[in-house]
Length: 245
Image (cartoon, rainbow, N blue to C red):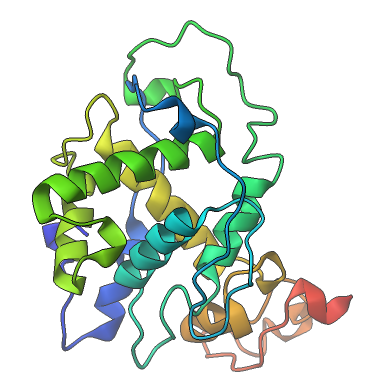
């Protein structure tokens, strides 16, 4: 989303460069003071389906959160000749499953203070679980979007959503005590994971991302062909974990 990676309408691959080269570490130095209800996710609400591809209900995402993620990933990965949109690729489903998992609940994360502002190289410095982190970030982003645009992020026009994501990435969006830049980095990170992960986890539906980059699949059943296809393109239907179940 930076200027140097600005989309080139004549080069569709360039529009996806952010997926290949962006930094994904969540920086330190955050001291969020979001409303208590935002830090404790509410019961999952009926989801807004994307072209009939999303579940009727999510495991943990509220309707507002699902709408936010759908708008974000569709802005990062718009439908074109390469793949369907990010939400139609199943990325929101992937995010929902990840945030509903033990990882989303902060399993194996050190969350005992003190929590102090620190340099990015010291890593994550918040008491929030990943699930809470995204919940707080969405509330803060929507509040900022209301001030700037008069509506929630998911209701913005496509060009406004892109500008909003750039403001988050550059740390220019004023989210109170919540730092916009690490929130964008975490959002980009989980979108990348959902786009390229094995389809068994909910994203990369129909293996569209693997087909786009020519990845033959996770299990290396093609190892005996490495020498035969050295420096040559290997075209084959990708295989996922589910194909070997």
